[in-house]
Picture 1 (tube, rainbow, N blue to C red):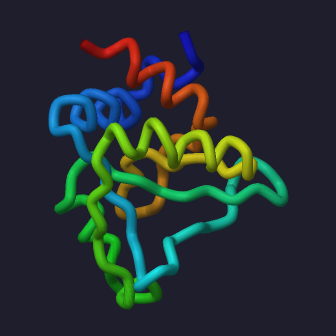
Picture 2 (picture 1 turned 90 degrees about the vertical axis):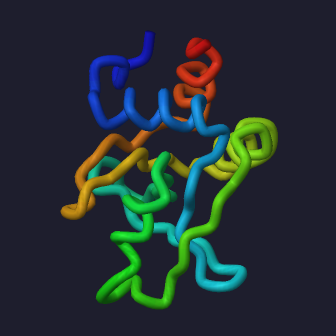
Length: 117
């Protein structure tokens, strides 16, 4: 079991993503939101949300140009997670309005999603 198994934000992300079959990212045309990790030097994090309203709430101030974009869960798992793993990018799951939340390895998230029925 991964280190985020008991994190409520991470668990909600996994359960809602699995139930709804979709995750949300912030996009400005072809550009996707990527931020620097607060936990690891020289590491990028791409935040995702399991709820469109929560993602949309972040489209303000410096991120006002971004819009939510839905990604089907199968596409996210079969393509995005592998690519992010290869690129060394972490995943932010269901960050709150203060941008607090887990920074997860793509492999850990894929494992957690595969365990949910």
